[in-house]
Length: 183
Image 1 (cartoon, rainbow, N blue to C red):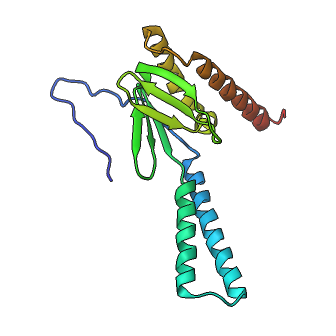
Image 2 (tube, one colour):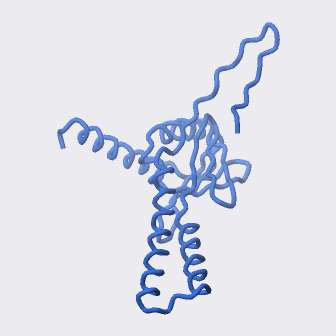
Image 3 (spheres, rainbow, N blue to C red):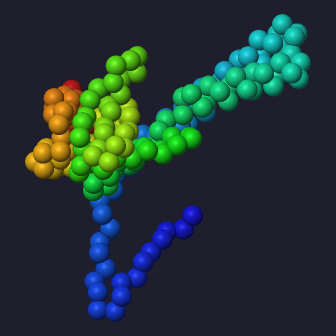
């Protein structure tokens, strides 16, 4: 897993790498998913041991249950570059062209999700907490969404983007106040 580099041909100047922002809270969320699964496994083993009913098949069942919990809680890794947003889960990766967005909307359901669709038909669902916790992600996405609106490709979703901007601004201001001791 080394870095890939490309060399410029003779007489050409190398292009600087495009800005890229990653979800900085992903590692902590992944550790939490594993910790919760390990805690569940330990508690189930302890209860079974105290009841004197622990057997190898039951331990395997508890381990399977803990692994299932870790898989359910495992967060998607979000990264944004100029013109592209990618969400990588355990089993699949999806991405959209953020400079060619067609719609941005909130999904209906228990877990709040921001759903992005581009002109090629690609679709990404992401947790808005990733954007709130990482202003750099939001800044790149917002800039490209504005480009989509100016080009006329963004048919619906300006309200959702404004709502997201308000959430990010509130959280950023709250963090600044907290760090400066003014809260």
